[in-house]
Length: 277
Image (cartoon, rainbow, N blue to C red):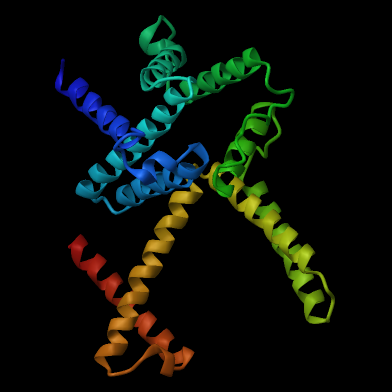
């Protein structure tokens, strides 16, 4: 047995022990697919966070946690007679070989774009063979983060030509949606009870933002995570500067906090300039 096989076997044995009705962990025994699904999603996000921060020790741990979730689901499935962990690994191996004929077969692609197009065609064929949908949009799981699902829906529609050919047209649409949202906000200030319309227009605007990200070949989830991290880092520095001045943010005016914020940004800019020298 190889080192990899031995480590996987050890992990499966640990999972089986945790789920053992006689002497196992009460919490693990109580779990089912639904109860651990949120943990699976959480672990995937923690993997993404470690990658975002380029924290390799953390990434190693989080990938282990995510792998444990796969083993956990597989163990429950095995107990119910559905499938085993080996079935899971064999399934993904078969799928990867099938979807990469340029590596494991005789197909040839000139670039990554051709390969991506062929990948989508193969996936569409698989969905059709399963006879599970009648729409090109069917099969995009509703459990995805909203921005990610928007991208996938838009990519599906683009496959049949339903897409703007130029990024400038997406920007025009974004300006149109922002204007519609602004109109509803004005109506609300006039006393109109239109929160439903405001929410709808905001959603439309976000959908176009996702489309813009797709045209720019940007992952909106990653971009927003980066913006969150940048805000968090800057805000903590603002708190530190306020503390150095013997102040609490709660007792400061917005103008005073903005001044500290600008100071933090100026320091970052100076640090970046010094790094380039």
